[in-house]
Image 1 (cartoon, helix red, strand yellow):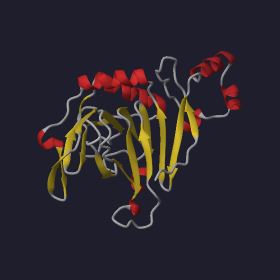
Image 2: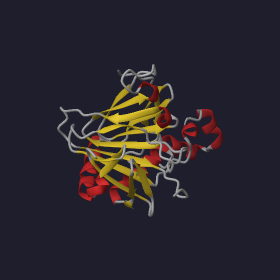
Image 3: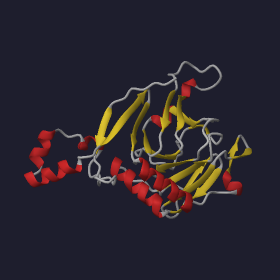
Image 4: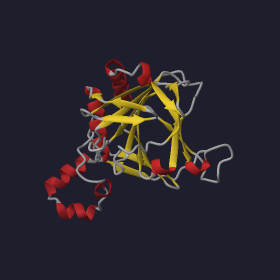
Length: 262
């Protein structure tokens, strides 16, 4: 079932695990050494090389119409601290806000959910409209770290907490109209490692229709998965039930919502 086309890439990182400010796009970070010698003096070049002393290794995950980048963004001790801080800070939805509408019927969500972001932002899916709460200090910290690692800014995060392997998420695409199509969705995983499965839209259903095979990967504690365009146009993704998993997991999907849309 696993299918990968991978290539390693590196982005800059400070000593101690805090990421450098990203001032260029992905391509500009990979500029040849000759260009750096032209643009920077000796002192500036030494400083720049020092910034790259602990680069982040990225893995490219590709298939037909699928483009993702994956890395371990946080060390284990950092990830542990972030998980524990989120357990203290986050407030999850209850009642009707903890349900979704599917074909006119209401179902309880098989996990806990919360939304945080810039003031006034709302995210709508499956008949539910969720207003963003104010950023917590830990969410701001993680958001800024993701921005420094990727060069993309985010104004909203959807939080999903899975108490164990029985909590799950069904197949879906993050293709809501209020999402900025130029910005990838950045998925940070903390806690138990879980399988994450992509299925092409032409491969869904009982017999499928001859689309490419599913792509499966394990999202590790402290990892970051970037889902770049056109992934969410062509591929559904899910977090299936894993009965052997006994530990909790928190997933943060950072997004950029277009504020002008209502």
